[in-house]
Amino acid sequence: MKIIIGEHSFEAKFETEKSPATCAAFERAMPFASQIVHVRWSGEAVWIPLGDRDFAVGFEDATAYPAPGQVLLYPRGKSETEILIAYGSVHFASKAGTLAGNHFATISSDLEQLRQIGVATLWEGAKPIRFEK
Picture 1 (spheres, rainbow, N blue to C red):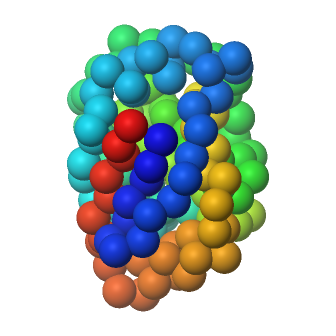
Picture 2 (cartoon, one colour):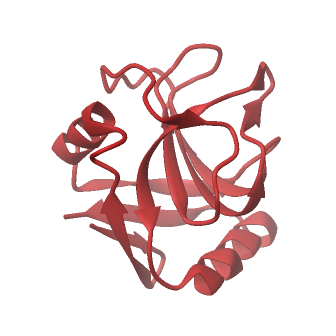
């Protein structure tokens, strides 16, 4: 999979062994385009708020502490549906408290550039993102 943020492209892989239902649901939604904004409570990450969008998946391989490059899908519950992409130290949370999202993909290239984009999103605002097969 390719994740394109602004003008930069990252290689990523689906975590099909650990999160098969989430990977299948997200793959059906591709190509998926939106905008990332910087997280409010979680630390060093960007996120895509998705409101009431329902991917029709439960929790699988869920974590509140993703490593840099890990992509999580929070499928609704205490908070809205959202996608989180960690670029540094993260404790995934919302105004409702700690959240655990499904680790469904991992960015496998250019993590230093991902960090630079994350910091730029904090200071400059939203950036376009696109997930492609």
